Image (cartoon, rainbow, N blue to C red):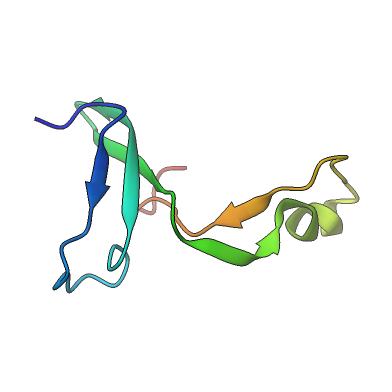
Length: 75
């Protein structure tokens, strides 16, 4: 059974490119499904680069990691 805090490691022959070579940290398990975030796929953009167009800036910048919901109707 999967629970929050578990790490899911993609098998070597994973065909789904969204998860291939990924390590996912499970953050929530519920009736709506499982939520997790990739912990090993940093992107080339930082938070400040993304929010720059909103005229915002963080004092401490952070690296963004690839991810997002598989279901596109949720955040």
